[in-house]
Amino acid sequence: MKDYSILIVDDEDAQRSILKGYLEKKGYKIYSASSGTEGIKTVQNNLIDIVLSDFKMPDKTGLEVLEDVKKINPETSFVILTAYGTIEDAVKAMRLGAFDYISKPVDLDELDLMIERIIEHNNLKSEIQILKNQLKEKFKIDSFISHSAKMEEVLSVAARAADSKATILITGESGTGKEVLAKSIHYVSPRKEKPFIAVNIPALPETLLESELFGHEKGAFTGADKAKKGRFELADGGTIFLDEIGDIPINLQVKLLRVLQEHQIERVGSSENINIDVRIMAATHQNLEEKIKDGSFREDLYYRLNIVSLHIPPLRERREDILPLIDYFIEKYAKENNRNKLTLSKEAVDSLIKYNFPGNVRELENIIERAVVLCRSEAITLNDLPNVVKGFKGEKEIPQIETGSLIDQVEELEKKLIFDALSSANGNQSQAGRILGLTERNLRYKMQKYGIKKFG
Image (cartoon, rainbow, N blue to C red; front, side, top):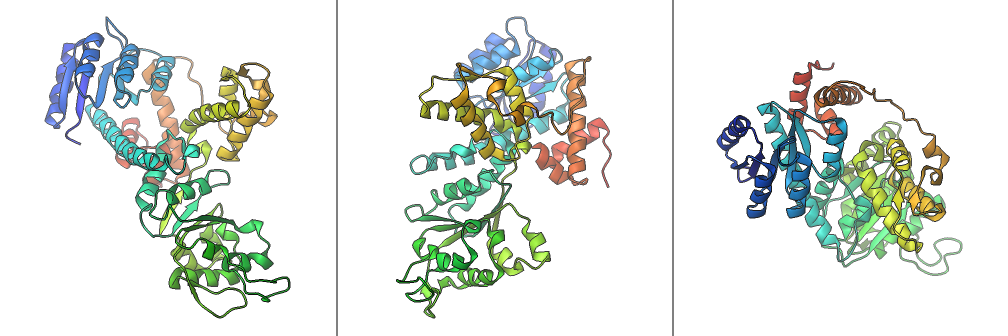
């Protein structure tokens, strides 16, 4: 943490001096500039990790400094310091790549938490970039285009688990990309040269499921005119992915548990043990703990499968990912359909951002593919979207604040989001922090700042 370099860009001498002295005591390497032009030159000549820039300066605005800094080094984290501006300015800063903004006069505790968040974010980005770089040769991690802290945490755990032999249980709603994540893990693991075998359990008739998984001998049942290897044997040395594991019949759960414990299978119609070396990954959209309570899923099997747990949040809980995914899918399907580069109208963007996506990333991909095929011009408009998207009003309306400064508006919005997250988490601050993409310490600070009482 202490080797981070921070540039302070502010035309106010007193503000620069206060921040410089405070951050130097914290052990950071500090640069300072009294104008936007000087700040840009500093970034050109030095490796700067974080820029803290005033929004309003005589020669350049903070947005202009941000644009120039990102051209020089896109990896530099940028924070706007402002007592001016509007919500539109703040949104534009975020779109241009600003990490966040802090109101002036700067609260030093809030600044500490902001820098801590940046460092945590950059550490996660580094781990994820290593994973993505490893995947390039064998498998593209396209469906995990992600700007959200929630997905970055999932990918960070996935990257660390990839080299192990541990079983992995991936949970999440339908359409979130559970199989894609499983493939990603396989193709950066030591098993990457061996097979990845996916089994969609609900798609197989229950009468044939045992044979499909474990194989059968000739004559084992009517129609078994020759011996057949099952999916586990085919995956030997590699990975088997059991999709919708919650639907596996209780009698087969016993056999699956034996595979996990003994690393052996028996074909249907045989008593011979066959040794296998297979890594098991499973996925479900169901609550397995509830299925344990009602007796339809074995508790011992659950704990064997759930060595490493990965939960993919629904798209509505990581809305930061919607625009990057839209851009990717537009480019993908425009190319597939021999269309020129397409744009998206403001009304279409607004509708897609508000929509709740019950089908998650899969639904978004289908919507964009349809729009690319049907649109008549170079721009996808509201008319090219399905009626369900056009007519969606949102489950909750965020109150619009018509008057007041940027600080007032941001604080009101923050208070509402924090209160909603705490309500959803039944007062659990750790869980609420994860919902908001904040550390628990950061959340506690903001609760104290806004006078939000402890829940429960």
